[in-house]
Image 1 (cartoon, rainbow, N blue to C red):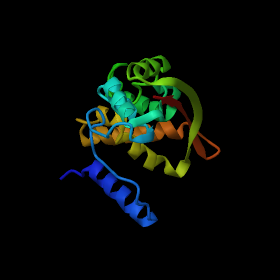
Image 2 (cartoon, rainbow, N blue to C red):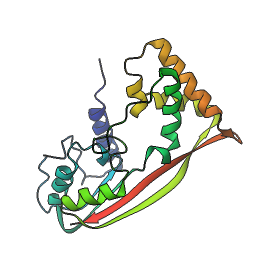
Image 3 (cartoon, helix red, strand yellow):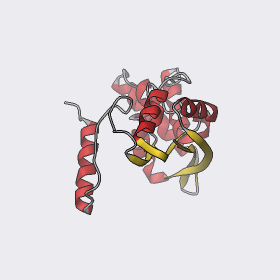
Length: 208
């Protein structure tokens, strides 16, 4: 029986809020494109790596905008392109050597981790959704993985994003070969006991 990840996340959020004595927070599982958040209700809205998966981004952002008070601020962080994110690129390339094909990549206008990687598209979507004063700031750093954590990171990589999709119908032997390939690729980049893989994001703010 599968685990309902969203329900588990909501439960953990509620438990943490209760433990910290925070009473002015509500946890809701809803479709942001159509959920009624009320009008002019909030001062700000924030998302951390979620907005790239909107099936209708203009509709979703417009719905968020309706819930913000005049002058309210939208802020979110999303991924830059795959080549700016070696921490995703390295496992994907390693698995491609095993399966013979690259992990499936959504089109530029389709939901996916890189759907808002183009600042021009971000501006166009937010403009169409009624936002102004759009500021987009690229930020780059590195994910640092200690050598002893490479097996753990390889397993996590195989369970997320394009690598997960590439291995969705794979047999156990292929999965094991893929994990070994990811580990090997990461070990090939070890320097001074750690792997440094680039991570690139866009920090976006806008207002209504």
